[in-house]
Figure 1 (cartoon, rainbow, N blue to C red):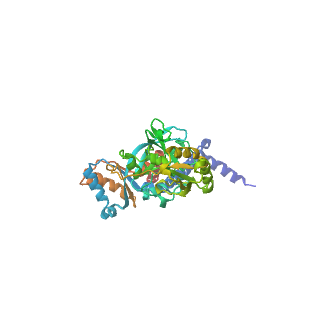
Figure 2 (figure 1 turned 135 degrees about the vertical axis):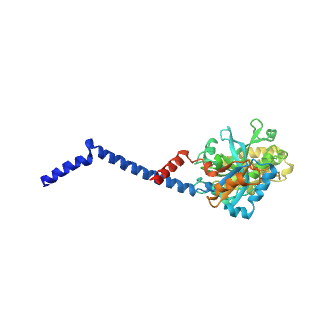
Figure 3 (figure 1 turned 90 degrees about the horizontal axis):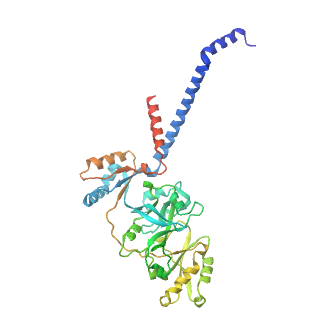
Length: 395
């Protein structure tokens, strides 16, 4: 039993504590809610900051080339000096190009993708792009297999969907919409003078720097710009006489041999052979082998024989006919981008200011922290994080 005086004390004191109409209790609940909300926002902002600090893209700065030729060359030379790297704490510089390129979807539609061409596909930035957390469903070529002379592309998840694929059926090769006027006389199907030239998919990723759809190698851009000897033009009898195929790992060499056996005419049933023929520049992310079908005395055979065999093989079993694009050396104009990889994030703003205001060169370029170029970043997240930090600093 509670004594009467204690009941009276509790009754009277509770009125003062709770207030009229329990207004004090409601006020206390609102304050507690605001406190927990602030804690949640604080934890969220710290998590967001941790993600950004550990994001490899954040360490990169993209510089758009607005120099004159002599000033640009001078600036690149300065960046390559060891004392400059030590002063601003960066370890990697690459020269890139940007251009829109057309690709053909599996339904025949043509899509134009904003594409960036890296000077070195095996750079540290590409290594960051191919991080396991960024790669879609493990679809990535091993980093050590990347070569500067590749015709392959790293594509974003969104670009993959536009081409008519999803994560469960990522292709080993996609079709580049390549100008090949006249190739229809060689058995190539054309669409307004353009053929579907297969190029390797190096990887599929969630996001790419600079909001690009596709990333390729500078070597591909060189070959594309080489109008005198354009290697992706399929109007080439040598290409059509070459029966080079990618055989997916799931199919196997024996099954491929059976497919070829059915495609080769009876008159040549004992006059051909299949041999491995790997091409580094045509390697894709998907495991498999490259094989060539060689015919006896093939130089004396009519071109139609090769066209008929290729048509009979088609894409049975997931095989893909490839072309050993005959690349040539070609000198490009100066790069459109400079990308700098920083070891210390503290040096990025200093680097930008020095380049813009203290350099002896005239530098009419835009210095953009590549953290702003990440497709998943949300402006309101940064605003919330900043607001919470300000509130807590005032408190």
